[in-house]
Length: 308
Image (cartoon, rainbow, N blue to C red):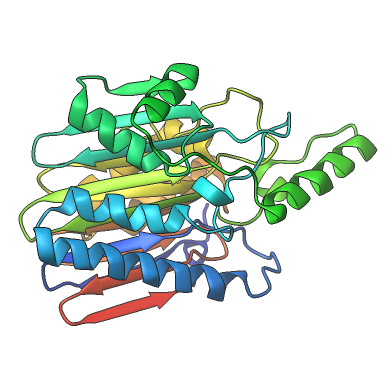
């Protein structure tokens, strides 16, 4: 049985247009210092940028792309500039986005060239019929599109990788993912103009992952999903999220059964494994089964933020 207090769900009535973003869930019982406050401040900045685009252009997809680019452009979050490192000490990133009004999506996986992976996914959606582009060929397209190149890992990301490397050398037993890297792992945004919905997600993956590993973020239904009813993006341990198709199930549960779905997920996969943000008819919110998740919501004339 799952203690239902493990699962936290918050939802808010929205005045369209609306956008909500997150900076990645973190594990319960972990001392995060001032990370939650700093990450929620970045989330608010991203939500305000996305809401500006949403108000001006009336396009939810462009809004979530611009919001995620803000989230990718900081060393405090694990996406884009702040991406953590795989077991070989290199950056490899995933991203995806989806238009709910025609079910069109595009994803990139295991890329290292672009500073803003979500921008590459957006170009793929705009210019090709490809759904998922991975690895070296995706990096070639990013270069051909003259996207801004990644400057290399942040000192903060490198230091975390170095510490885990030392821990693993001392112990023959590998720790679970959520103990290796207890802070947020994926960033994302969902938005609506009142009639249409869109979702976008970006990540540097899991710290010390096997090189070439692809998580849930580029997989529709797992890391993200949008249709005519709403939009969802997920964060957490990608292997559990993908097996459960968490984003699709959460979307189908809006607004009344989000907690029921996440309780079921937690019963199968354990606590501190996932968080989601969602938007649907007249409601937007977030949910998680760990310690918390930095988030920000802009709708009507106000913006809210938090990390619990």
